[in-house]
Length: 150
Image 1 (cartoon, rainbow, N blue to C red):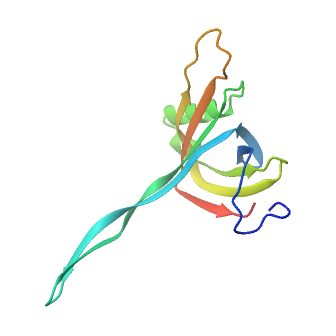
Image 2: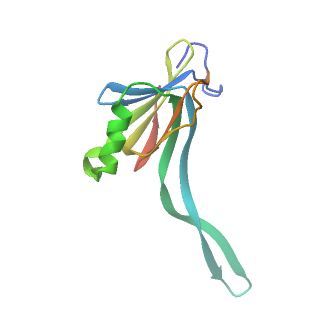
Image 3: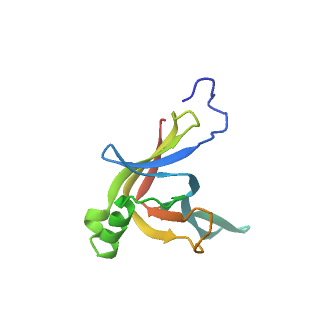
């Protein structure tokens, strides 16, 4: 944690990275979101006086992480996604870390993604001669996600 940053202070981040086996395979400028969700299920019970309707936790959906960056010449994400497209999901499922870095380059948060794989790779639209940056969006799906220390 950065000096002066308390447990209840809001985090800010300037860069996000995906690291596999200690090697940073990609760096991102935007985290669009981390989603974990449990579908609610209806539960109905009754006693002598009333019918009780409750919502209980049901099936957990796989967590997703969506990251964006300016398109680079790096091939690591593309190769990882190609292994999924080729049906090599067993080898494509890789545990990795998502690290969030502050403006001074220090890690401020870290998430561990267990058996992650890129379910979607999107290259944004761009007109010839345009001055804006070509953006790449990556969606990672994993079996579980755990917040670990920075």
